[in-house]
Length: 111
Image 1 (cartoon, rainbow, N blue to C red):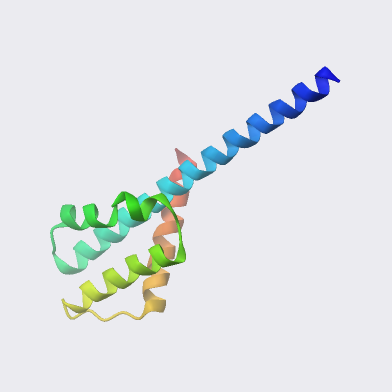
Image 2: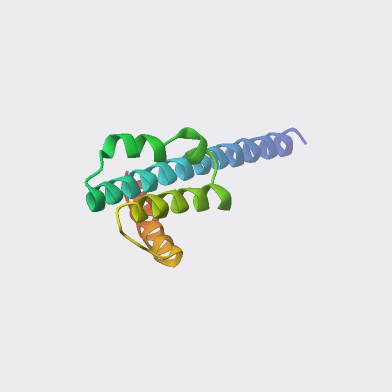
């Protein structure tokens, strides 16, 4: 019976470590995606990249991936682009964000 309990405890600890690693990986990918979005925005508008990066890397938006947080980021960027006369639909914004999310995921896989 003792070996069985030890095995269950070991599997539980492994599951917790995998969960934590997955959460950290998700955070890294979201933060990197936001950084890439900020660079893209700055390239289109000649805005100061550092201040825009700070806004999009705000811990509140990178900590948790929710539809609301993702929608806020894309809406913010879209509205800011409109101020520069660049009009993109939300579908186009989603495509750009997904492209950068995949790029961030590939970078994470290599590290």
